[in-house]
Image (cartoon, rainbow, N blue to C red; front, side, top):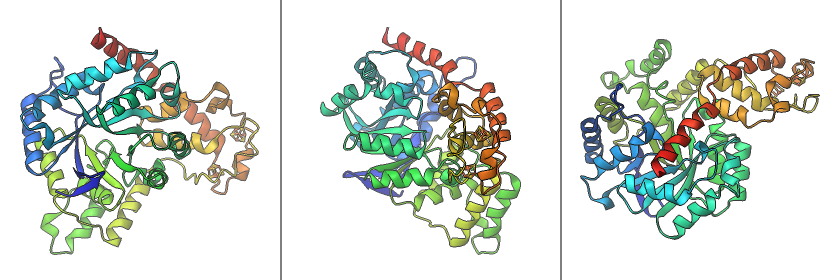
Length: 400
Ligand code: SF4
Ligand code: SF4
C-alpha cells in the first residue's frame, strides 16, 4: 500500500469511501456481510482511512461503517465524518448533531472531520452567525473530539481562495473533486494549487467521476489499451480506473484518494493499483489529457473574461459557462447549486441577447445561445432546494 504522511499520521493513499454500499432496494438495508468482507480485504492490504458523512445512505453509512470497523482496534484506523451544513434550512443544535455522529460511529473522537459541501450557495449557511456552525465545530476541535478539520468543496477557485484566506489557520485539509477530466473541466488544477499555496493537504473525491472514468466508452478505453499492447505488459493491462488513480498518485499534495467501493472486485482492483507507486509515462499522461478533451461536450471557454466588461447585464459569463459545461457532462446537482447561489439578475435568463460577448470572445463562442440552453437545463433540475426538506427531516427525526 502507498502511504502519505500528514501531520505525523501515516495515511493510506487509498481511502475507503462509504457512500455507495449496496442496499436492499425494498428495505434500504445495507448488505453488512458484504461491507465487512470489503473492509477485511482493504484492511489486510493496508487501507486505514474510512470516510463517511451524516447524510450518506439516509444515515445508514455511519452505522454500517462503524459495525465493520468495530471488529478492529480503534487506534488501527482513521475515521472521517462530515457536518451537513449544506443540508439544513434553519439553525439546529450543531453539537447535538455532532455527538449523534460520534455515537453512530461508535467513537469518542473523529480523526478527520469536514464541513460538508461548501460552494457559492452553501457558504452562506456556513458563515451565518445565526447557524453558528464553524464556532461550534471549532469548539469540538478544541475539546479534542476532532483531530484534523477540513471541508469538502464544490465551488470555484475564487471562492476557495477567498474562504481559505478568511479562515487562515482554522482548517488542515480540503477535499475536492479531482480527476484527469476535472483537472480542466472543473478547474481542479487551479483548486489544487490554491490549497497547496495555503499549505493544506489535498483530499480527493470522485477520482473516477462517479464511475465514468472507470468505464470509459469503447474508443477511449481502446486508446489506453493500445499503450500496452505493444509492450511485454500486455497481459497485465491496467483497468480504466487504475489509470485515473495513477494520474492522482503523481500529485504530491494529495494525501488521500477516496474511492466509494461497493464490489469486492472493485476493492481488489483498487488495492492492486495502490500496491505501489506506478508513475505514468509521458505518453500515458498525454493520452489521458486527450481522452479528457474527447469526453467533454461543452464549449471551450478559457475563462479569459474578455466578454465580461461589455456585458450590459453584468453577467459572470465564464462562471455560467462552467456550469453549462458541467451540465453537458452530467446532469448533477453541483451546477444547480452553483446557479442557486446567484440572484435573479445574474442568472442566464437575464441575458438580453445583445451578442456583445460573442464579438469579444477569441474562441468565437455563441454565448447567448449557450445561456439560453443553460437556462433550460437549470429549469429542468435537479434542484438542491427540493432535497433539503428530506435532509432536514432526517436530522429532525434523528435529534428527536
Ligand atoms: S448577449 Fe447576453 S451575456 Fe452576452 S453581453 Fe449581451 S447580455 Fe451579456
Ligand atoms: S471571452 Fe469567450 S473564452 Fe473568454 S471568458 Fe468569455 S466566453 Fe469564455
